[in-house]
Length: 310
Ligand SMILES: C[S@@+](CC[C@H](N)C(=O)[O-])C[C@H]1O[C@@H](n2cnc3c(N)ncnc32)[C@H](O)[C@@H]1O
Image 1: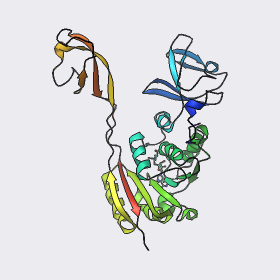
Image 2: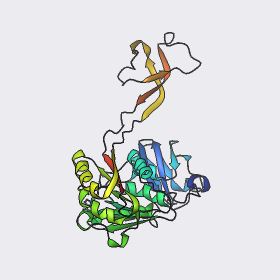
Image 3: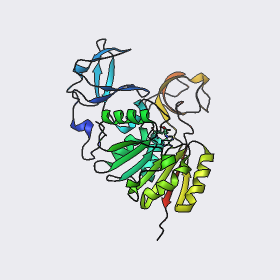
Image 4: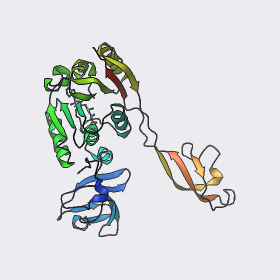
């Protein structure tokens, strides 16, 4: 149900049907994935929502509870899925994911190898990037995690684009069936340097590898291993800062030039038709401030291109 065919845009083409997966959006930080089932209800702090009221409505609709509360029903996308999936492991988030897909040059038709699968956060975006003709083969040595990931991929409708294997990639490497076939390989493993020689054998000529590691010591060790068969080795740390931009009621008598009381420095702009701040000491102002939820360090992304040996 995640849109994987670039010629279609689910939210514009289709209305919600019985059996669809929808993202129920209360606020940007309160969302959940729900499978629509004609006879079911969703109950939350806003009241009871009947799924039958949702069927036939376009994605993006605002729907109401028995008490007049509302939520929005959004079409599932890899970006939203990453925010609602159940965390069985640490996961990759949008800033790292988007950088990985760009830098690994993943486009429709690519064959991508990945390990470990973890919670399938990255895998879901990889699947959309290779769709409709490519494929992601992802491996995890933890059987239960692999099984749960498979269930999630069924649920999100991407299982035809992803195959999950159970395998110790650090110990055994990737299966020989993929030798010389992968456009790119992605590793999120505790000791990636053990899997790098195998990853190199799987790549097509000029293919690219990426390894995600939370610690710089892991990066140093991986780079040492990469130097024998790879070139153009680069490491990045992707830091994302999100902003809240909204109207705040401010008591301007307490606001200094650097920012508002109790908040980190923020940029202020008065709505256009208003009087000056001095005329109206308790006024509404449009403020922008860095979000307190901004994530700091997640990990380092090391990219390298297979050396051409001929
Ligand atoms: C941090 S998680 C990966 C998260 C994933 N990138 C995501 O975005 O959801 C690391 C995964 O690697 C798996 N793993 C660890 N060692 C492994 C090995 N030797 N072979 C295969 N998988 C392994 C773990 O079971 C775990 O599920």
